[in-house]
Structure formats: structure tokens, C-alpha cells
Amino acid sequence: MWNRVFLLASGFLFGWSLVRYWTVPRAELRTHELRLGLGLAIGVVVIVLLGLESLPAALAGTGVYAFSALVAYAGNARQVGRQEQALPSPRPTPAEDASPRRGVVLVSCLEPPTYDGPSYWAWRLRRRDAQGQPAPHWFARPRAYARIRRAYEARAQRAGPADALQGLGQALGAALGADYVVETARVGVPDALSRTLADIVRQGATRVVVQPLEVFPDALDAVRQAVTDARVREAGVRVTVAEPFPVPLWECTEERLDAWMSGRPAEPPPIPPSNLVARLQHAVAPER
Image 1 (spheres, rainbow, N blue to C red):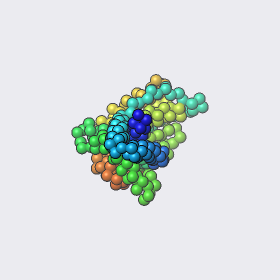
Image 2: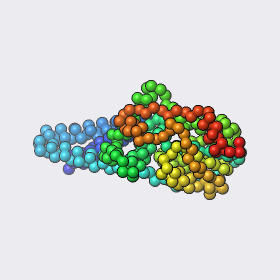
Image 3: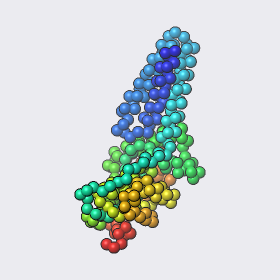
Image 4: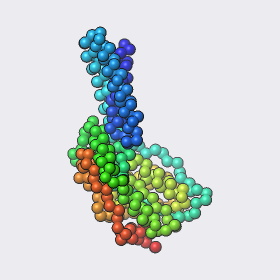
């Protein structure tokens, strides 16, 4: 009886950890390497001990271990690909010493500058599924996320991570001046826009423009829902979701996604030129 318990537990640990090993950021990899190795080592030891007594018992034990690992892997693989439910947000309040300002949040579908987990990429693949386009089966997606992580590592060896969205936000903030606070957020990253809006309100913003940049048309609904979830309007903040602003060379094409999933890093999107910053400034603050 004890051997089945050990085999079930170690198989579950191995299968669950394998998904995490393939999907977590590089900084968390060591933890899941150890869990993966522990699950494998316990299973091998128990199967060897069973084999010393009886070959059929060892074969049966191998089957129990493999079944447990498969069930755990499948459950976790499905879990990491699901849309994360937005957590309830407390109503934000401005800091007592914050001066009234205006806010701008630039929102983009661009891939993150570094691999920070599967959430964004799972969102991109869910979009593919919804549109009937070819996409890896959910069972194989953890391995696709591992190739994406490897592609990021290959790009980092050539040049440091460049965040074009953050660069554009900094340029726009410098152009608008101290009366404005400019932040950025990515569609597909859970709660990113809601957290950013709450933060911008705490900095004293009383009127906020959410400016989508070259986003997928179907992503606008997610942007509007995130504004509602942030509860900033309940705090008396006026929030406007503007029409998408075109940014050349920032298209989140399916070809770029295919390159990432094959382990080939896509070139970082360029930081837009100054004339585009000027046009964006006029779009979000026409009075200036």
C-alpha cells in the first residue's frame, strides 16, 4: 500500500512540476528543477525496490507513476492556459499630499520586453483558438512557452531588453510636462491596466485618457472592462478610452508569434520617432 502512495505522490509532483518548469520565468526555474528531480528520484527508487521483489510489481508501479504524472501534467497544462479571473479591486484613493494632475495610460498588445510567465502568451493563443487559426493543442502549450522563454534568452545575449512601450511613455511624459503623469500597460497581462489606473489615481490624476496603441480590435472590449474593474470612476476620476492610435512597425502579427513559439526571437519593436510622439501628444492633450 505504501508504495502506491509514494508512486502517486511522486508522479503527481513530477507531472505538475514539469508544466511549471517549462512555463515559469528564468528566476523561478531552480525551484521547479528541484521539485522535478525530487519527484523523479522518489519514483525511480520505489520502482527499483519493487523490481527487486517482483518484475510485474515494478511494471505495475511504473504504470501507476506514469498515470499520476500524466493526470497532474494535464491538469496544470490546462490551468496555465486559462484566462485568469480579474481580482476584485478596492476603490483607489489619491494620496493626501498628491497635487491634482492629468493622467495618460498608453495601452499596447506588444509582447513584454522579458519573459515573465505564460499569461500574455496564453492570451495570444486563446485569441488564435477563438479565430479558428492554427494553434498548439493545450497539452503541448507548456513546451511552446519554454521555447518562447529560450527565445528571450537568446535575444538577451545579443542586446539587453528594450521596452519600446516604456520608452514611448517616457518620451510622452517629458513632452507633456509635470502636470501630467504617464504610465503604460499591456493587454493580455492580468490586472495590468487596472493596477496602472489605480496607481495613477494615487498620484493625483483626476482626469485620465486611456490611449490604445495599435491594439487588436477585439482587445478594446478588454480595455474597457479593465477600466470598469479598476473602479477609478467610483473615486470621482473621469476616464476616457480614446480611439486606437496607429504606431507603424508595432503590429502584433501572427508571424511574430510563430517566430517566438519556434524559439526564434523576434526583433524588438523600435521606439517611435519624435514626430510620432508629437502627434500622440496632440491626440491625448489637444489643448497643449
